[in-house]
Image (tube, rainbow, N blue to C red; front, side, top):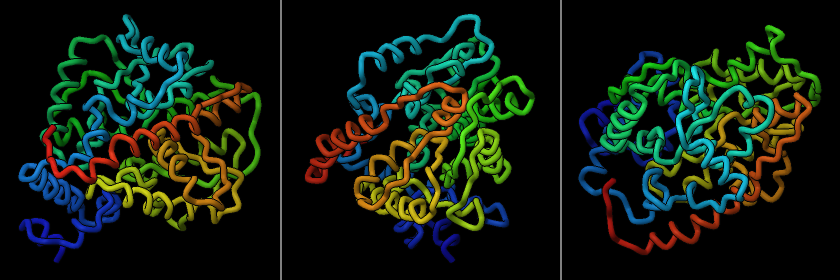
Length: 357
C-alpha cells in the first residue's frame, strides 16, 4: 500500500518516518527500488517549497558550510592545499571527498607515499543532494564532475569513503548520466589484497575485539563488500563482533536522518540508537570505515554519558598495524563541527525563509 501511495504521490507514513538509510532497497526481494520513489517524492517537495533556512549551512556546495568551516590546523590546511591540484602523470589517485577532507590527517603515513591524494571541497560528489532527494542539484554535480575529469590521465580512482565510491561507481553514472574514464576502486579492498599477497606486511599485529559499524552505502554495495570489511580487520589481528544477527541490518550512524526533515533531533535520535547498540557489546572498540560515520558518531557520543567504547577508523587501525602512530584529530574536529552547527544552523529554525540550490 505504501509503494502505491509513493507511486501516486499520496501521503505516506514512509515519507514521514524515513531516515534515508537505503535499507529498503537492500531488503526488497523484488528490486522495486522503493528508495528511488522516496527520493522522487522529496524532490517534488523541494521543487515546490525549496529548503528551510536552517539547512543552508549543511549544504556541501554552499560556503561556508559545516565541513569547510571546521577550524583546520595549519598542517591540515597545508594538506588541503597540497591535494588541490590533479597529480600530473599519476595513473592511480586517491580521491579525497568532503568526509576525508574533514579528517585529512588520516591520509598520511607510508600507505600514501606512492598514492597521490587529490580532492577539493568544490568537487563534492553530491551524495548529500542525492540522499535528500534534490535530484537536479545531484544531476548538476554529475555534469560538473564529468566535465572536470574529462581529459585527465587518471586510470584508477581510489576511494577511502564508501559514499564517494558508491556515488562515482554507481549512482552518478546510473541515475544521473555521469561518464568517467577511470576505474573506481575502494582503498580497503586494495590493502586487503596487498596483505593477502604479501605485498604489505603487517608488522605490528593488533589484538582485541572490534564491534562493526557499517556505512549505509556499504549495505547497498552488498553482503560481499561488508564481509571484506570484516576480513580486513581479521588480517590486522582483530576479532569482530556484530550488533545484529544479519550484517545487512546494522543501524545508520544518523547523518542521513536529517535528509527528510532537515532537523538535528532526528540525526541525534538515529545516532544514539546506534551508539546504544555499539555500547551493548563488550568489544574493545567500534570500528568504522566511513569518515562521515566516524564524525557523526563521535560528535553525538557526548550525549550518551555511559558510552565508553573508542570509535576508530579502519585506516587508523591499518596504520597502527604498520607500527605507525595516527592522530586523526577527530575529537577536535567533531567539537568544531558541532559548534559551527549550533552557531550557524540552529538559529535558522527561527527563520521562515526558503532557498534553492
